[in-house]
Length: 217
Figure 1 (tube, rainbow, N blue to C red):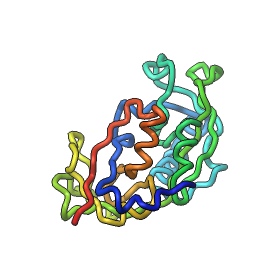
Figure 2: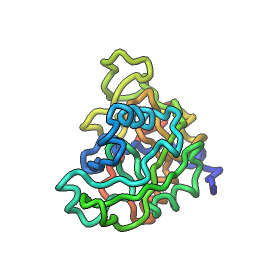
Figure 3: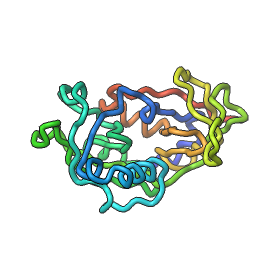
Figure 4: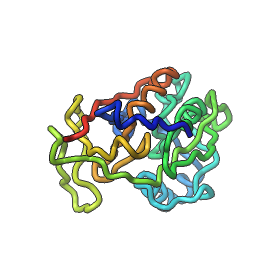
């Protein structure tokens, strides 16, 4: 891990990725457990998405593409969702592991085309993020969707048409992890300036859409 100790002095913003919301970064995949024990598998996906306890043994070792339009694509993105699971390529893993990811870990998974035989190019991992870091600052945020659900875990959600400076964060965002999720802002995925710049330099952005989030105060 190679953390930038001067990060807090040199930046006044972080970045919010729409990977957990974007249809361009959501791919349809299936597996044996989904086809034979659907309810239990849906519960596993829900726990994975919320950062609740999940063991590596619970996760499928092999998944195959279940969407015809996705199956016709030549490559998968370097960071995307596969039927609710967060997936990272080997290249993305190599970049992110240079930063502070807290308790996040990478668990190998083999991804196949719909014939259940042909592998997708590259090596892939589940990116399991059990930490939830509260940095969202609703008081100073210009625009977000307030919570409309009977759920005490989050304050709001991200607007589909979010733009730079709509969402603000507290100063803690500059001194903690370099990539994190915040359950108070549902489906959020934050990056520090340093970690996102490393992803850009490595040419791994693909269709990833990000918006700038100023630090309040």
